[in-house]
Length: 428
Image 1 (tube, rainbow, N blue to C red):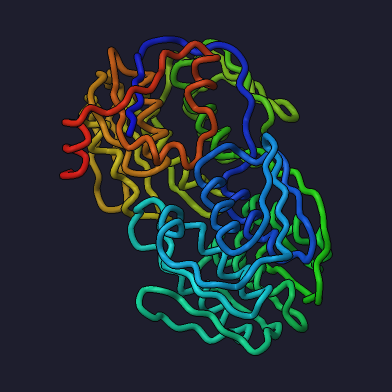
Image 2: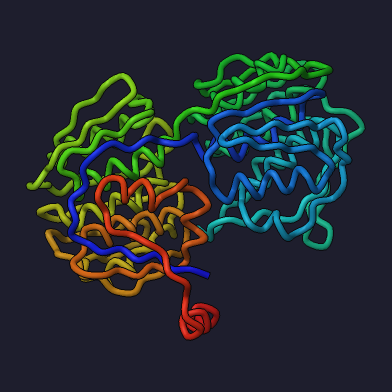
């Protein structure tokens, strides 16, 4: 086990390249098993969630080969065997195996998904969709069993806008008989990315990017190659870090339209930036102003950027209010920021940040992926040394985090945890 050490106070300058989208990758890899031939996915991020999903596919008989950021998935020898807890518990997106296995084999058995602990995140909308397509769903000894004699297209209205449910139903429906219509569908770019892969495989999908998606089922899906979109959350995280500590930072391989809600709020704060076709240029912005933020489904402000920008807001003059309407309990990083000297309090689903408050390096713990990113940004801003445990959460979603920050001039490295620190983590 390791900890991340950040020496704060060093300005950031230079160029950083954004990796492929984590939230696309974790759906694209399961989607590949729907094909009857080899599928190639390029520009995959080198993160633990991708490695875990590759191992899951190998567990059920797929042949997975990886060269750099390219993964070849041969699903022809897959056996629809149960996937119990274990690897499944390591990431929440393992639930995409349900839709893919159900679509391909008309059955699936999978342990309940894991991932970051962000409070209740039910999969009832996923199950509602599977049942509408003709599947029988049962919970037996902690595993979900999905069984269908055949899948038939259906009209499915999602009670809440859900990225996971939209993708999972889409995976199950592409090889169903007839037309499926998903209403109140999510519009995230990652959904478009998955639909692009499926369409390249021969699926018939229309309406992605709108709130109504229409899918006409096909019997077979072919081989294809697909290049993943840039990670808008990674891009947003480094943009926030550049706003906090940057002199001149060029962020390359981005789709600015995917970040418009963040960029609008950073402009409101007074962050100096130039926006190109596939690049962002952030200049030193010393006089940041407080803002109010409310997370919303895309194209609103992303909940995954709520925690990183909360760290930045400790540097802004005045009182900021950040309200998370997606995950109401996504404020576990607040106590850690307070350890560093932040003047922050949580009221219901909102965090109230009183700035400016200088941060001091100390020992903190990342409780989930984006909380880890927030603490790294806080560490870059803070005076002295910040030690961050829970690094495994950060590794789930950020490729080569230290190397990218070091290339900009940050002082950041890893050290093994002492026996005492490991014991403290087990009891905390």
